[in-house]
Image (cartoon, rainbow, N blue to C red; front, side, top):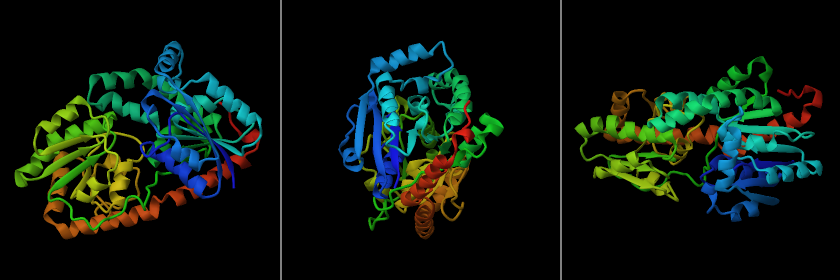
Length: 404
């Protein structure tokens, strides 16, 4: 059993799926968790009831819109990324310092680049930084491929700062976690030889009991794309799917329907719903009915970082998945068996048509996808690996801890 001081820059929830499930599974495994979380403006309505039941203690510090604007203003003349500056909170940082000074904890776990500033100055305790993704790698892609000029501009403005920060931040921690080998490689390239085994791949998991195959008969020729639609990479993928892939599907199957499910669709994505064959749902509190009705889950991301949780959830639900290489690079799934992969609209449309026309193959790929996530993306297995990371961090002597 370990005593973990777990720090997040937002409220863990079923939307913030990675920290929520790590917390849930750590607690179920017998570890004692003290959560310190910021509550930014976008999490104003988030519930804390589940977290208070799970954790030994939960301390929450509101992060107001005024505070975030002030943080950005202070960061402008510095090299600190605006993403990291967003979460600067002097009261929370003083509270964390006092908690560490109490000597009650074995290890500190801090979530995301936004949370790194809260824990960078903590000393005298092993610290694990869950970077999740390489934000530099993401911004390099977004600066070229994001669907809107404003998104490309923001990525370009913060890219240099983020590159500088990610080249140094992991050296302030004993271990740094990322969800995929691609992101691990990106960080190692930034850090160079000093990374020295400190970058560890810890993939995302999926709740196998919550997302499971059902006996519901899928709707005919229904293609589902799900995810947080306010994320620019998902927005770009939704537009690519509707404008480039679906017209090729409709040539042979004019009855086919497209469902785009997820929070915060951009105006361009919402406007796709003008076509009666396309449904844009907006926020959905439970995706399982959509997975149950979907013939195919299609994830045509053109760029991105890390692991796409909605792909894992679709596979866990037994829905056959078609995706781009960008999505699959973080997975160990076998193409053609566990999922289908295509890198152009023509190939993605051809895969879609082949599965619409072949129910037996659909069922086979859906079943294989479920077996894949059972093997590689079980939260209990992932938390066992995380516990090993904690133990390795605790075993490092102060002399071996590199500082930037």
